[in-house]
Image 1 (cartoon, helix red, strand yellow):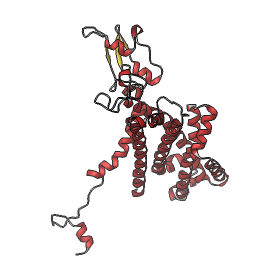
Image 2 (cartoon, one colour; image 1 turned 135 degrees about the horizontal axis):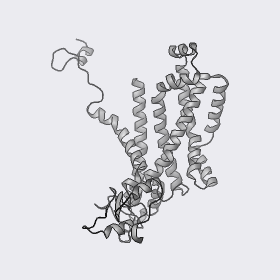
Image 3 (spheres, one colour; image 1 turned 180 degrees about the horizontal axis):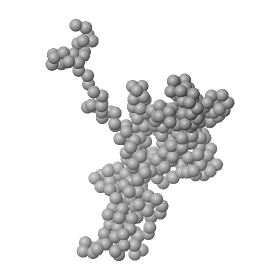
Image 4 (cartoon, helix red, strand yellow; image 1 turned 60 degrees about the vertical axis):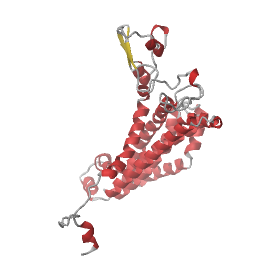
Length: 344
């Protein structure tokens, strides 16, 4: 009996071939773990005011319902009732009254201070501790995810749209279109991402819109190069030649027939770009030129490093751990997508 027969034999000796199905046991966990981490980061970033806030999700004030945390999600928080803060008003509510308030999971805001908790160590009430002004570090980490997502996600999505369309057009049409797109790619490759962002921050004063535009200008070339290479290998396929022979337009061929074939490659590039965007935003905030200096992992890391000598290790450890975990998850997701693409 050959080695192949031994490897494929049934362990019970019945002679039936045994093959382990993909996606079982530890393999399934490893497959979905990057998706869960990245999905958790995006969820926390998009809905941070509903997760950690010092205002209620829902409150009944004098018989009228109010949604302060949801208002914070889309705009400005309404002022507290009766010239009090929302927490002060909630603390004075009577258990026999009709008014009530439902607080978020983490009932602390990123800017809420407590003089009795200066440099508070991690505890049951404050798992990540408190900073030099008594602010809850966990609430700040949650809202730091919002800062990273609000800058990185739009940048990656817009860059993916522009780069994918231009790369697909260049790879399928070739000729002058391909030459022009390649020259633009070579031009933008000359500018390092961080230097480009520092210039934009110095010129536009850390404007969120300006930094988003700069990231789009830097990231679209990654999508364009990948998609163009995929199109060069797909443009000679029989189904493309048949579609051209039938008079189908170039853009219809791209959208209906070719782009679905490149989704895995686009996903890999998007994951890498998202990791790069988070690192870039954290670096700018660490240098003090980010778009939101009060709610950023980079800002927390800088403040924590300045106070590390007095033993406040938790001020730099948790924001650093958040950056590492998210960037590592994005890279693991990209690797997972790349493996799936190779299998297909």
